[in-house]
Length: 70
Image (cartoon, rainbow, N blue to C red; front, side, top):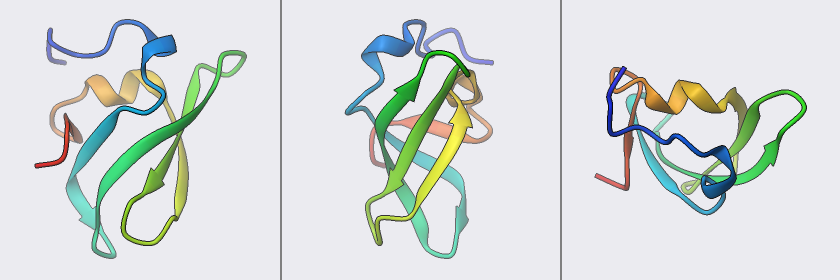
């Protein structure tokens, strides 16, 4: 995992991410919500609004995600 990864899940809402492995042309995602009880965030695909719930620490994995829209 990268050391320049998010360390504070509270600051993730509104952050933008690029998926390394594109799923059905969904490459760019934005964090729209956080569930502190489950340690998860909700990602919304920019392309079509599809949502996905993932553990927020998964965003630290640079083999899956990079910060910003690349």
